Image (tube, rainbow, N blue to C red; front, side, top):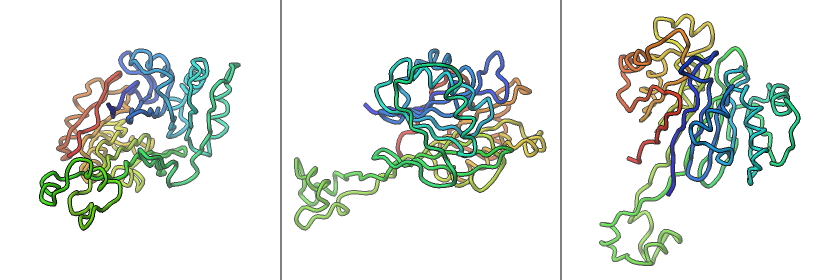
Length: 301
């Protein structure tokens, strides 16, 4: 059975706290796993969350600040130590190649797994598979930063009442799906479009066009909300979002499930982020992330 869920490994910005590890997130998308922004301590958090190195098929780094990338060294070495049987692809800002090289070869180890480096230099599609298209959009932060978006191809939903009306049943249903027509009956006569699911991951950034493009129509948007609204000036100065800004983006984009994360250590009450998100008018499903949480993608509408 296919599984689509978002596993939270860490939620702290800049420095970890007693209750929050540095960033780290795994998206399970059917049989594939995409690891986002492995900060320091990610390898241990994977153990606590029941995530294995074998679960990782791609690594996506938004930018090269330590809380989003210092865990790369340990994760890459663990992938090799465990002799993951499939190749792994790493996406990261091309301008940070020197940082990726240093982290990849931080210490001596034996390379046993093919790790493909696929740096991101501009907006656009990074990979197209039968399960999804992965694309990147530039964000606004003091260092170059990119957000990521997965879009599942649209599918087809067969409509039983229309099939019955046209006398199509049994093996002929599958034949009609494969061939697009059965005699005078066309596939579009007995089906409707099943919209593919959409997921976006937006980390350190001010408000910018890239944020809105990534969030548009998402079933799940994972987005930083480092600051509360009363510290909006600090957020702008340091290249971050507030809870209210993140929620307003989600509201305008028609997001179904909003996941807030990347919280400053200055705040002790996570409920404040939820209150400000609701005050901004977001009325969809809302999760204020905490370490080791598992958040399922919304069911299809």
